[in-house]
Image (cartoon, rainbow, N blue to C red; front, side, top):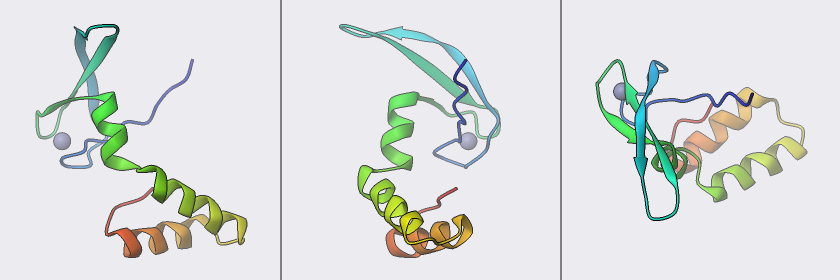
Length: 85
Ligand SMILES: [Zn+2]
């Protein structure tokens, strides 16, 4: 139902495939593999790397100020030296 857009944390490719699950103490962790650079990672490591809460908050406040999305991405990218969107 909910399709998450996955982007490789290493090369920013969108060619991500599921590659099995790993059992943790109390949960199943889905593992993913990048078809471009062949690195593997988990969804949680993805989250932490791509969008820290601070950046999301900043983006939201820019949206509230009425900035178009492309401008917001640029501003956030300059401020935090990250790729957004
Ligand atoms: Zn990759």
